[in-house]
Each structure stands twice: as C-alpha cells, then as structure tokens.
Amino acid sequence: MHKKFRMLAATMTALAGLATSVYAADAKTIGVSIPAADHGWTSGVVYHAQRVADLLMKEHEGLKVIVKTSPDPASQANAVQDLETQGIDALVILPTDPDPLVNAIKEVKGKGTFVSIVDRAPSVNDNSVRDLYVAGNNPALGEVAGNYIKETSPEAKVVVIRGLPIPIDQQRQDGFDKAIAGSKVQVLDRQFGNWNRDDAFRVMQDFLTKYPAIDVVWCQDDDMAVGVLQAIEQAKRTDIKYVVGGAGSKDMIKKVMDGNKMIPVDVLYPPSMVGTAMELTAAALYDQIPAHGTYTLDATLVTKDNAKNYYFPDSPF
Image 1 (spheres, rainbow, N blue to C red):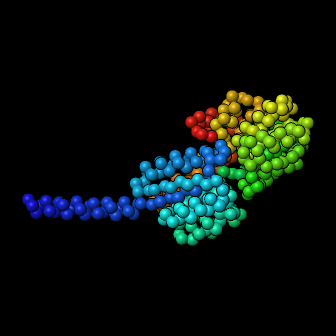
Image 2: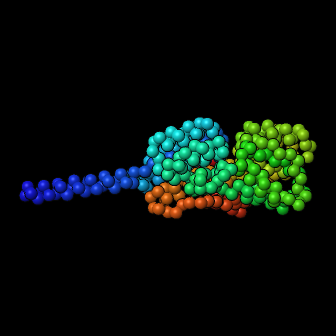
Image 3: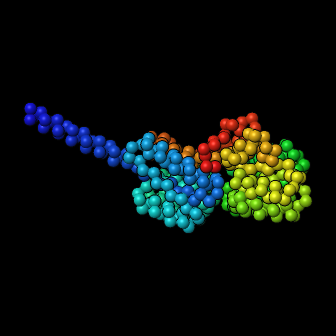
C-alpha cells in the first residue's frame, strides 16, 4: 500500500509540475496605453479598454492586461517605457499624438514585442512601427458627412469645426473636401475645436458673430457637437438647419432616434475599436492568428431608420 501511495504522490507531483509549466507558458502580459478620459470619446476608450481587459483575463488563464492612461505625449512615452520594463509580450497603444511617440513604440517593437496601434497612425505607418493597425475609417467619416450635406442641402453655407492638428484630423478633412468638390456647398470657415465641447462652444460663438447666415455645421466629434448646439441655442439663431457630428455617442444617437431636427444623422467612429485591437492582439499571442496589417472599421451613416442598432444607453459615451 505504501508503495502505491508513493507512486500516486509522485504522479500527482509530476502533474502539478506539468500544470505549472503550462500555466507559465500561458502567462503573458499585454500592455495597453491610451489617452486619459479628457472628453467623451476618450472616456469611451477607457471604458472599453478596461471592459475588454477583464474579459480577456477571464478567457486566458495566466494573462495579465495592464491599462495605463496618459494626458499627453510625454506622459504616454513614460507610460510605454514603464510597461516595457514590466516585460510585456504585446503593446496596444492609442497615441495621444502619434509622431512624438514613434521612438518609444519602435523601442518596444525592436525587442520582438507584438505592437498594435489604434486609431491615430504616425506619418510612417508600416511594419517598422507596428504589427497591427486598427482604426475607424477617418477619410470616410469626413466623406460620409460631406456627401450627406451635399445631397441634403446642395447649396449650403457650412462652417467646419475640426479636431486637433494631427494626421487623422487631416484625413477627415480631406474626405469631406473630396465629397463636396464640384458642388455648390460653400465652406465659410474652418477652425480647430480640439475635440472639446467648451472649445467648440467658443469657436461656434465666433462663427455666429462673424456670419449672419449659416446653414449647416460639420464638426468631427459628437462632444464638440454638444458645445455647438449650446452656442446656437444661446444665440437664438434659427438659420442653422442642422449639425452633423461623428463618433456615435449615445446622446447623439438618441437625438437621431427621436427625430431631433438639429441632429438628423450621425457618423460612426466607435471608441470600442481599442477593444477590437486588444482581442486581435490576444488572438495573435495565444492562437497564432495572423493578426498583421490593417483592420479598418466602417464609417456608417446613422439615421432614424437604423439608429436603434447603435444605441447603448449604459455606455459612458
């Protein structure tokens, strides 16, 4: 009997050692570096990053996902370096501003770490910088908005509120300009609103003072649209027919659902794309899925007919 017990104990010890080695083999770390929640869209990014981190850690035993938020490029570069020192197997990064972070990203990738860039691409966006790029369709976001305005209000006088002077803003602007090229749509002015509702409020106040007749406002972001609507209401201007925003915030989607005449449509640019990048990155690590190259999401025009498909009341954005 003692011999049998010794054999059983030895077998159990061997199995425990095997389990430990399997666990160790599956023990991986994904670092996630994203902007701080300084406006609605980035608060959605933070929410989805944390949500998907929890889901992935439940799905993959031994996986650790570290989410770090940063308010500016310098802080984010430090955050990336901090993640690197923790021995990450993959980095998912949505840059605050991509070009100033290229060196920090390349340093991580140079050590053989799988790198996924989300949303904001650097000027050179190839496999020297990243393995995977996940983003919304920035040119299409502008093009879809421009086409809607051109078709709905073919002789509209439009003011444009841009985001920040970074590449994705230019891509959106280029798409918009392409859509209205050759039409009778007239752009009166363009100013940066920094994807911030207070800044957009001030820009819109300036537009309302300078231009006695405005038909349509295009702003690249639903957060800015909130400030725009406040400025219009405060000025009691009735000449403006509608505002076209973007991103698909729950408040703007609800206005579209309810038939609000000032927000007849919205253009999707979901903050959940960071979660998509995290899931694809985990698949590359654990399942050897060939998750390389570019993954682009659609810029869907949200109308009263389809708005219910994009309304998530529990989302922070």
